Length: 197
Image 1 (tube, rainbow, N blue to C red):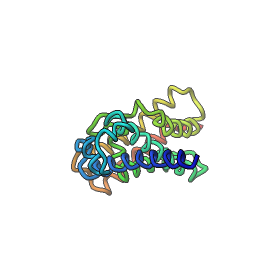
Image 2 (cartoon, rainbow, N blue to C red; image 1 turned 90 degrees about the vertical axis):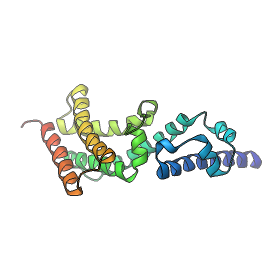
Image 3 (cartoon, rainbow, N blue to C red; image 1 turned 120 degrees about the vertical axis):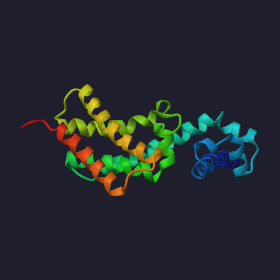
């Protein structure tokens, strides 16, 4: 039994090493620089061994996307729990989303398709941030129908993701300007959510 456990541990360790090597390559060379041969060379295995764990490069991208959404969800959840006031919590959540995009740029790129093919639709973990955001949006709005909440979520997402993309793909905007645009957008949309008294 102990040898069976050891074999399972070694397999999981190799799988993690493959993902770590892939991510390290991406950090150094970008997503276009990633291939199975480079991963194999990095961990000093042959390419066929890599294929025993992942059928192709897309399978690795999907696994990294899953990892990214799990991390993003943790950060958004922590931000949500930072305030009992739903408006303040919502602002903190979108700021956490923004911070995540730049603290883990490469994962954000694959998660949301910035300068590459998006793996969003193949990952059930991608629903978790959406669910957290829509729960708080609904609370701020006084619990209207789900379609209007969905619309408001995508209003937020479109503006914030757009600003992130501008900064990732172009020369970017000055930090002070980014901060002002981001806060104006978040607070403007939050104001539009409030139910008239």
